[in-house]
Every structure is written in C-alpha cells, then in structure tokens.
Length: 288
Image (cartoon, rainbow, N blue to C red; front, side):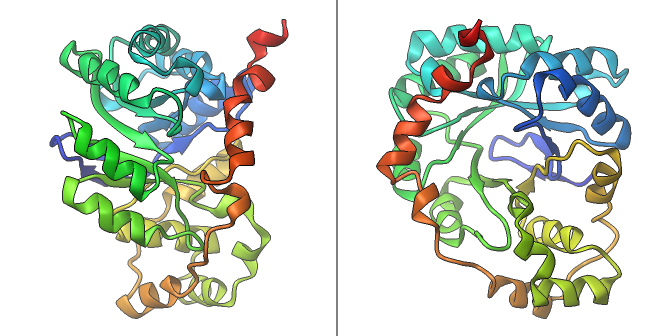
C-alpha cells in the first residue's frame, strides 16, 4: 500500500476504507472484509455510531495493531475541552485500542477550539498519534491552523473529480496539511459513470471509471476513503496502483471541477441546523 507522510512525519496509507453509512450491524463484517482484502486505513467517526463494529473487527482480524491506521472524529455534541476528552476515551474503548492514529474534529461548529486543546493533550498523553480537521473551509481552517499549537495533519473534505478543492489545498499547503477525501467517488452520482472524459480514460487505461477517479486523487497526493459494503468493489478500489494517468489526462479531469452546491455547503444555515440536531435524530442510543 502506498503511503503519504503527514506533517508530523507519520506515514499514513493514501487509500483506505470508509464506514460512513455502514450500519452498526454489518460494520464488523465489512471491516473484516476490507482488512482481509488489503486495506490498512479504516475511517470511522463517533457520529457514524459504528466504532464498536470497527473495534471488534480490529480485535478479530489477526493483523497487528501497528500495521493498521485508525481514524475517528469528535462529533459536535462532544465539543469543548472536557466533553471532547471524555469522548476520546470512549472512542478508545469502543475501538478496543490504546491509541488512535488520526483524530479529527468532525464539523466546524460549537466549541471546536476547546476540542482542539483536548486533542492536543491526547497527543501529548500518547492516546493519539496525529490530529486534524474535517469540513473546515479555507477561512475556518486558517483560523484554526493559526491558533493551533499542533498544526492540523489533515483536513477531510468532500473531494472528488467534481469537487476538487483547489482553493482549500492552496490555503492548507503552508501548514503541511493534507486533504483527505470523503465522497471520493462522488457518492455514486450517476454522472460519474457517464461522463465522457472519464469513460474515455477508463477505456484508454483498461480500468473502471471509479478507478480512474481514485487514481486522479492519489496522483494529487490526496488521501481517499471510498465506502462500499461489497468485497468485490473493495478489491476493485484497491487496484489503482498499477497505472499512472498521463499529465494531459490529469489536466482533462481538472476541467470537470464544478462550483459547490450551496444546499450542501457548511455556510448554508439550514445544513448547519441539520448537523447540530443530527445526534438527537440519528443516534441509536437516544431512540431507546
């Protein structure tokens, strides 16, 4: 597996397996399949409500812990120095591990400076190896990065061939912060499979459109975490290290970038309200 060096010199796999919207009931099986297929980076979050499934798989998989790279994220309801610290310990318990490889602030809302202080302490206490952000747009990213004692190692953003995050990358580069792509396959958007540029390149390289889309991110040194529950797709997503997109093909894909959809922007008040109420609506424990 190809790795990428973070700004604290930790090596991280550039391609991993994401478990967003993988149900708690099937998460353990999916992560075991992913690890068995060759994935070593597993990305979860407190708000996915499946950290326990990931932890069970890690305990059963037979792969030494130091060969795995676990990422999780602190949710909005756990922001603030004290609550975040407690939630980190809870995530460690659910993941059945002594340390988290990469811990992120999931959303740029509520007391995220307090959360960052708790995360910095967790690094110093040996509970976490690297820390970063998720969904922080350039303005809030710079505010956070300038404030931080430990600079963010990654910023996880919606990044794919239609949402390429060039502006964000420009602001992150001075801090050595890497983009980590969620929705690297555009969340299965039909246009991914029908776009004429991508289909032509898939034919040229003898690959699938999805493999071309993932290869584009990898050649930009962007960490990608595609999600699937099917082992065949897991294998397919890993088969992206045996070809290289030519410079002119990289440029042709760059033209596919589109303006952000405000409906899904973190600057949209309605989306912010939805996220602030997310835990009350979707947390299985609140429905018991």
